[in-house]
Length: 242
Image (cartoon, rainbow, N blue to C red; front, top):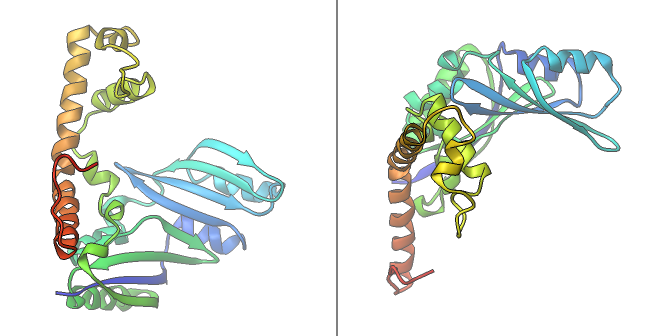
């Protein structure tokens, strides 16, 4: 069964889209992170105070950089409720969102992969019923050519992890715990926190187990499609292959 990659743009009430319409040239790229959005805002006029105030109103500014022509601001925002988002509509029609969503000149730009043409057409019809939609491209693709990284949403990958488990992962990553050789021991990692070594290790192990479990279906998809390609070429994958 053929799959389709569809790119389209639309207009609806959203503070990110409104800001891009208000300030010509401002571009906002949006990724979902658990119950909030991460935004990368690019503005061509780094001295426009009105633009800076509008960006600041979107949420918590995490980082700001500027080069000779553009201002780049990273913002954590909860301005658009995820529960009511268009991305939820994609999921209801068995379509996979390919982030980021891009807001520019008053339009929201989306790309999705649909596993059936009927699902894609139903999604577009539903969106067109209550907002202006402009389909930019619709391309049939082979399953093994699906960009695997795009199939893993942040929400699904980190589903079920608590704040303490996420913090344990961050500490371990920052300290090089997963490097070879390890950059720190469990005891050294725990010493950076206020919890006992056994408690920290429990947080870390549970985080690792949940990550592997959540990623399992995507690992299977990746290995199965790679196996199909190798078989078509007359070779078989082995554990010895690097």
